[in-house]
Image 1: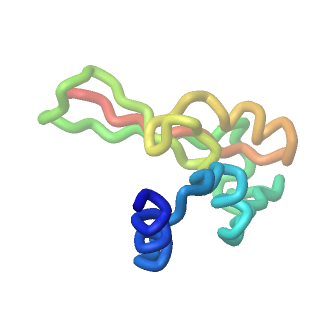
Image 2: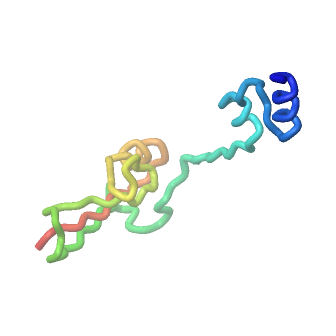
Image 3: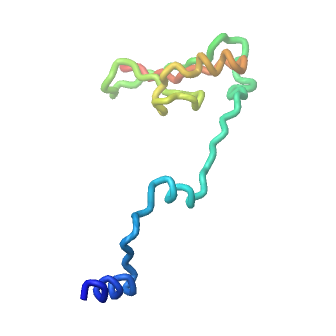
Length: 103
């Protein structure tokens, strides 16, 4: 009787084998790769300055100063984490953050 129940369950699309492992499931999905090239972001704007940083004064901010990333390398994007320093050394660029200051 138990054999007949197992056969009926197998016929209905059930399997008593092992469930798929995460490695076998991920092997079936195509993998995407992102390549970041070390190129200048600021090819010609204010190149006479060591680091281009702009400040904007805003009256309705929660914090007295907020720095926003303009190098696209920040781990806390859109907020600046200082990654532009490494980027500037690697590429000779001079990009810096956008600073929003509370008035």
